Amino acid sequence: PGATGPGGSEFAEFKSKAEADHQVGFYKSLADVPPVADGVKRLALISGRTMDNPRLLGESIAAGCTVIYLEKPGAPTVKELEVMKREAADANVKICMGYNKNVCKYVRNAREFAAANEGSHVTFVSNNTYENNASSLGECFER
Image 1 (spheres, rainbow, N blue to C red):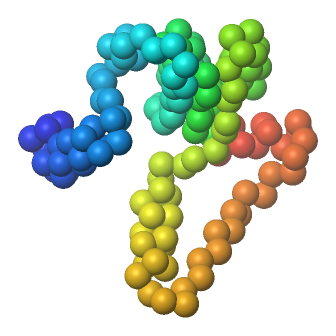
Image 2 (cartoon, helix red, strand yellow; image 1 turned 30 degrees about the vertical axis):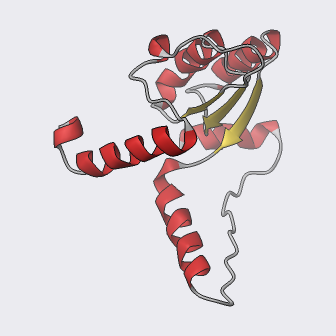
């Protein structure tokens, strides 16, 4: 699979364009990412398996990321999230949580549709029913 599987050629085209037009780098692991140049900011978007996220966060910090966009729920347990929060704070790294790869293509499609149709308006509404308190967080991990 990979490059020869479904979507492989499309990804290769996207990769080439992103590298050429936006100076975006693509690496197989965080260990392959070159050191951060002085004065350059580095962001990581962690969208992996939930159980891998604590490790990926640590590797992102070690790779010089100063902002990490972490896909929810972020970690398998609240305790691991708390450890990750401390690790980021100790390294002066900002964490933003959100993003859901399962709906990302639909958001893109809606935006493209709106842009192509004059007078269109798109409103995104979350059905996230969690209250902003500690007791609601547990349910997030149970789903």
